[in-house]
Length: 237
Image (cartoon, rainbow, N blue to C red):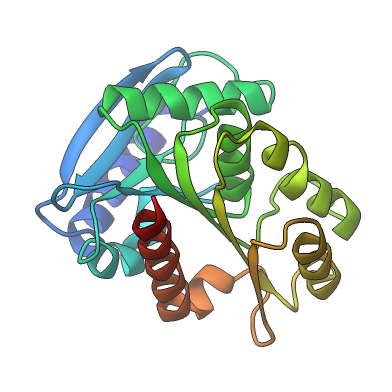
């Protein structure tokens, strides 16, 4: 239970960090969903946006090192997931992948976003995949950063989550980029090989100096890869 003084202290700290870390011109929008109010921050002009999904325990501030560069390529939407530390207010529990897909779908619909380039870290990568599975046709590209964050992870289970159903349900090819830390909690090389074998069009990259902190250690590489993937997908559309 969060006592009022603790909540107020968190709100002050969050507001201070937001002012320091995120561009001042980012527009704050609260999206009403079936699961509660979702805080979002948007910036950039027209086009299919990058939608940034943090890992478990994270929020929009997790992407502070990414926003300024990504928005030079296309709009950016950073999200505080419901149920995580941030400014979103959860009103109903989410039980499974379908719930998370519905939450993201309703969040984006409230922002009038029909298609998106999803960039997900850890648990956020799993949410991105569930969204692509349950809402085919809306994910233009998916960039996964060491996707895990959902309990004890094995290479076999991670590969199943990443591959299961996507090829069969997507009405058109969804460009995927899995970026894995070699020193993470699973055999990244094995997972990358299985992805490549089952989805030849997928792109995988294993970074030897990174673990589950991939999004912090390899910021420029991640940004460059996400932009190239998005550009290639839109050029072929």
